[in-house]
Length: 476
Image (cartoon, rainbow, N blue to C red; front, side, top):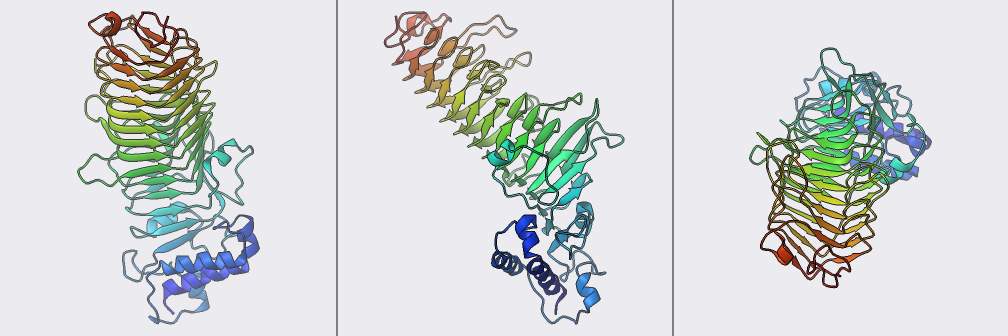
């Protein structure tokens, strides 16, 4: 029997003998013993088996996958099993994730059983897949209370105070095409002046996937960056719960999903945020070297959290997201944002909120406008200030067919402000809105050759109040 087959059979036998454990919180979180077998057979089917290569003793069977074969040989195993105490998975070859990574060849799968892993995980080989047992939906995970259960979850409990560095990383992705799936990632403790980052993907990598994780109690939950090299594979941040990432370590903090080194060709979808005081999702491209490009942010939800902010991002889609009771502006599009679509989002404000959707140039930075944005068919309600706010330096944007109700200031407010960038918002088109209960529904204090003596064009907006005659269809 080949050693790879031996490992698979041993793994199957262990799960069948421990079906009750698997049901209660083992590797696959299945519900019936026959489901365990079905999942194991599926796993075995993915392995390139080499049969009848040599006989294997019982001792070798218990230790298969750890012989002297070099990791890149044809006979090296393609999957590995980790269990911190070998209770859930008694045939695990390793008790530490980093030890499995050390011997795994590129492209291998590393299955991590429930337990507490007190280590800073470094993923330095391309194509590795680290797979934990968490399969709970992100909303359910984020809204549940209580501490993580090491009998059901693989918990990366890392030390952020690594000597000689400013920030500590729970999972540091330094290679491309890596998958991090199904973990709880949190610092073992937080220290004053030391930032803690749950999962960090470097800007020299691409094609990485971070999904189905619970990332909590860090300074920043998921810091996701990627290379802009031609042909780089897309990256994905999917179905994660990012919760209570609020430790002030002297650098960035209070953000759920974050990028400031550059993000390209990436999808951020179906994540749930709560308790992150600054933002749920924030992309801060550099004006000098690295504009974010080709980003889709869709079907995410933020409740009692920060918001969704983009700065210096080009060619993007932000749609079908839900933001409820944010701690600041619900969605902000800042200087350098260009050629983006913002559509079908549902935003509801609260007492601590500011604007619903704000489009502006960068404050305090280079005078780069936000331009060529198409803001369409969003629902914006009950923010203390403007529902949709266009501020200094914005130009050539189209704001169309949004439903904007019951905001404390203007429904749509195009405003000159006393700012360090005094260029007025000009050549924007505001059209086809349904506005009610705002103060007023339509507001524009710019001057120019546009509608009603403004510097912008207002067309067929259904509102009841306005600061100048001619902005709202029913205005008075």
